[in-house]
Length: 80
Image 1: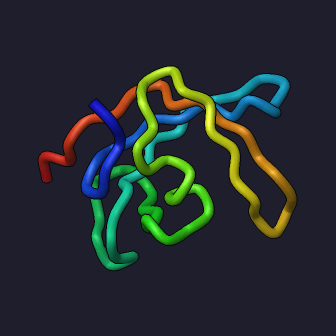
Image 2 (image 1 turned 45 degrees about the vertical axis):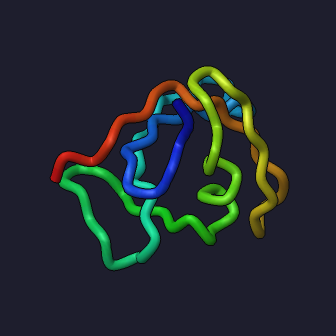
């Protein structure tokens, strides 16, 4: 139902002119890995924003470069 730790989360940047979907592993530890995707932790700004989000929900987060917005395209449990 909602994004939690251990999921592969696909997001789309809302502030880019021609955004690409990006998939991340949302993990408790930066040491966790999934093939072909970057890991973000649940304590990172993006990770915190994604926790509890639903498909098609827009989230925003503060990062060193400013405030960023993205939409949750999809998510699934990490099978690996």
